[in-house]
Length: 590
Image (cartoon, rainbow, N blue to C red; front, side):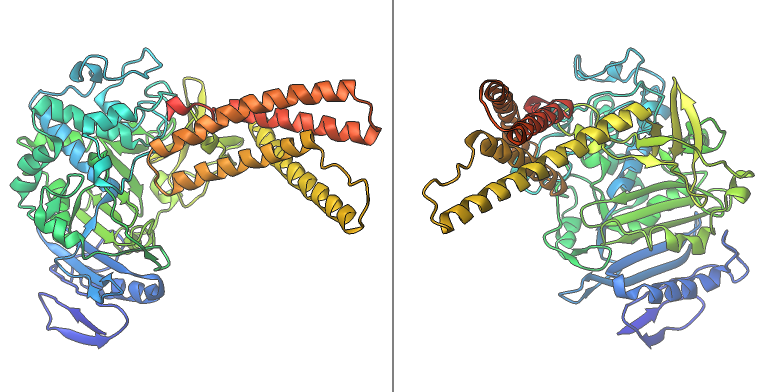
């Protein structure tokens, strides 16, 4: 396949390779990038990088720029491999969470007009009683939402929706899926899509414009971003809506993801879809100190001042919603992932260099992260931080999790001595909470007793299920053997113990269904019957335990039979305790 390279200083070159690449270079040869590579060499370096990963590449678009010019622009691979549609200047891809930058720019615009106070209680901007699950008296501010430290737990349901009829308005979606507040505001960083969507709703309330209309009127239109859409169904730009139908999505190894378009009800957190050219325009506007996004330069300067730091250090992690990504230099921006696309916008303000990457591969990191070292250099903890960090000790859990409600079991994720020298992190403590702080999320230290309790409960639950499965198999095998031997007195299956075993297995199968539904973006309403069944099974188990205890105490049996029955009773209790501890019966709290 031909590879086309367009340069301002060279003619068109043609070659044969697996992927199509289009490069635009617009810098003098003397310009050196933060990585140390000359600007006019970047296109060639990117091509070499692409050739090393062509076996797993679907489609990729990248642009490197300063505030005025494009340094290098590449279009690689396919928007639809099966149909042979190549990536080009008219290809649209999803920004994912990089969409959040539109929220924070909007907030800063309203801050500039004195319509939003970043340190004011956000309830002052919301309808009376809009927030119903705040646990702490400490006010939640807009700055907390920007820093993702308002204390909200994760929301797993209805982030991606397949059926348009299931869409809710932004305020209705926020109300329907309001998460519990599990941390005191300002203490722990826990990335929150819901919190960002809440900030967008505040923009909507304060401005009087629906959020997507606000973005078009105050960001897209002033910048000339004519090929960008934001609303849930992309209907705010019909050209983008139609072009999105040409895009297929793939896994990180290049496997097709069937039917990968989803609506996002919390659309300000991740729905923006555009061409690379529009994404680059937005990046340039953010890089420009005299940005057309703001009326005053001081607003731009405020945007790029730190609002949170890593642990107890003075190393910034967030700049009014823009995350720090450490390479050979500090960059700020935002990455994004949807069900089928990945993106990254990075800005090196010190050298005035920016980059945007877009791929139609879910969870892609080769281009979105590794390739950016060609532009910004490699992270070195001693060069970047000026010191070598000591490895933290203890057991940690990601703060971005659920600790209340029927998805609490998903918090069963622990890290021991979690730290990597080639990543940006620092240790610290806040309000008695020890943590390892990364950009985007903190790892919170877990007491040993809690780790033992939760892991012990879950392991015993698995043991109970395995015990029940083996028990049933043994009973069935023994009965089949007796029938085959034509014994007159067929050995009884044991009704009570058989029911107990079946119940244990049913509970575990039901749990597996919940996990599968979460991973397939099922609607929250589909979980409710499962959680109701968990509640019913809990009551049945209680009755069965009572009946079992009575049977053991009143019925004469062998010592071996008693041990078996008591073991069954104890493991039934283990299952009941797990259902209670992990809140699996709380159908009203999805």
